[in-house]
Image (cartoon, rainbow, N blue to C red):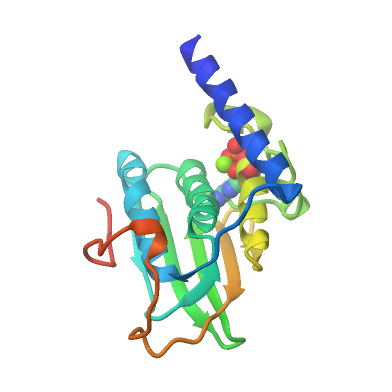
Length: 207
Ligand SMILES: Nc1ncnc2c1ncn2[C@@H]1O[C@H](COP(=O)(O)OP(=O)(O)O)[C@@H](O)[C@H]1O
Ligand SMILES: [Mg+2]
């Protein structure tokens, strides 16, 4: 019963975020953000969930991948994508998170998992509110189908896009792409993601 109340509370909160966000009623802040720091922080935060499933969570970050964005909102988008990778990948699987500069002058965050992948027919629809590939199976995993709708809003509100590549049965790859800001090789005044101070080693592997 309490769990059900929790679930409904989260649902309402998520729906509010999305509705207000899409209506442009969530004021975005703008800061220079080191995407690799943000990715490392998010991965460390969710590490324990992967550990519980005996999954290996590998993080590989490039230096000076800087974007201008609202760090809290981008972070929420990345959390939703990484959380899905852990949730939908069976125990013992592998999740790999990579940041890099694309040749196109963009910053890229990739989250790749060894889970069931996403059938072609569902690939665009999974960003819709409440859309879930296999409602029966997904219900066991919790969630209501708002995570990716929020992730897409979070990325697009920050001037980026989110893409999927997936061969069914061969895992899913989610790619977040944002305009890169040129810095002087990391020596410039680059803000860290909302107040998170230096946070230990960049690469972390669970298990
Ligand atoms: N990494 C993934 N691997 C396989 N399926 C996924 C993955 N990420 C998302 N999905 C599918 O997309 C659907 C929508 O995801 P999301 O919006 O986060 O909702 P929820 O996780 O609450 O179901 C999920 O129900 C699942 O079917
Ligand atoms: Mg989800």
